Length: 417
Ligand code: HEM
Figure 1 (tube, rainbow, N blue to C red):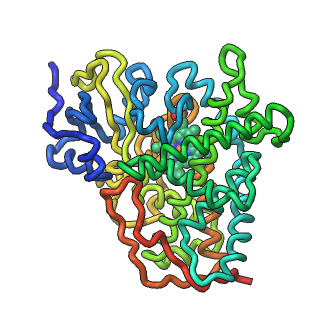
Figure 2 (cartoon, protein in one colour):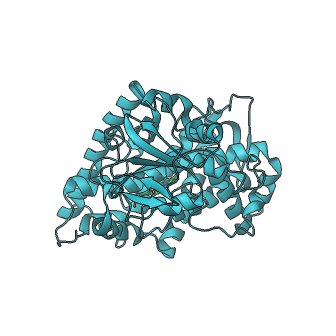
Figure 3 (cartoon, rainbow, N blue to C red):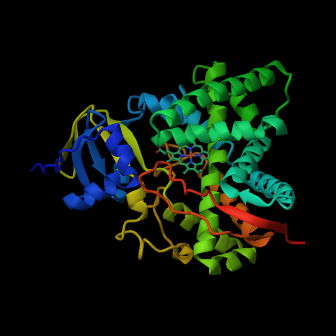
């Protein structure tokens, strides 16, 4: 027996998706009373799905591929060309192993230590300023952290410009017009910067520490033994530096969570690691960042008696799953303790993708994100005092990536002595 996937007539145009933003998928799911529907998105036949079983299916590479699924607007900004995101099968696993080799315990500890040091340096400067916009400052702190960790030189005079460009790559995701074009220009500039760094490392002009991302990427060999082209190596280095800089979104969300739930700040300030971990997990669940993921069906197949046709696009909801009442009790409340005895699977909590880190496309930097966030949250809660003036922190779910108007303003920042 064949079950028919419910169909809906939506224009599915870029404009519609970008207008409805994070609610584009969950709202239509609710309207249709389903976890899966067929529609047209960006002019192409598409299936949209949600739920842990759908996640498990989505990460089965027998049925789906990425190389043909990434739209040009994403390749010209956020991803760049030739990086790990657009590879499949053996090539993907080989390149992904390169990224995962950087995620050892000592290297994760190292990045947390660097982040702590960078936060303290920044706070010393904030003491001399009247107001501080946390999101803007966090971008610079995260970029300095990323570059130190990766072995990439960064001059202080370039920090603000580079942080802005790396943020523009992410901001272009849901942007049309100027926001998109800023992303395209930023991509050219950042790729050039990293290509120069790769060339210098390869020529011996620059000595990157053993085991650092710069060293590992510039020496990486493809399956046939050849080195990565300068361009591809640059794109992969940006794949490290850009997302670490983007942790600034989660840092700002964490500060907003402390403001909205003042008791959490006191708990974080005690330095209790388990609480900081639960808080970080809840920030990644509660606040919208990545909206959905896309892949393309590589062969006709049936799943739960439903037909998937070769060539169709498939979209997997991230935001809706993070707020799904079947997965989370009181999903619209911020409750770090929900993660105390949480027995999740690789398929039910997917703010940074699902499945296996080594075998599939799940975020290579998920552990870095968690480590850096834990350190950053303990710093904001326990190492500084600050005041929060009245400001507009409203978040518009129609904007991808989401960005509160005031970007979290703090005044009278003082390091606790
Ligand atoms: C700011 C927090 C972050 C978020 C929200 C995030 C989110 C994501 C998502 C949704 C994916 C796609 C998963 C998929 O396609 O199935 C991804 C992939 C990836 N992320 Fe992250 N990420 C973050 C931080 C990081 C960090 C810190 C790094 C590196 C240190 C990183 C490196 C990567 C790489 C290399 C991929 C591609 C993996 C692949 O295609 O196999 N990300 N991330």
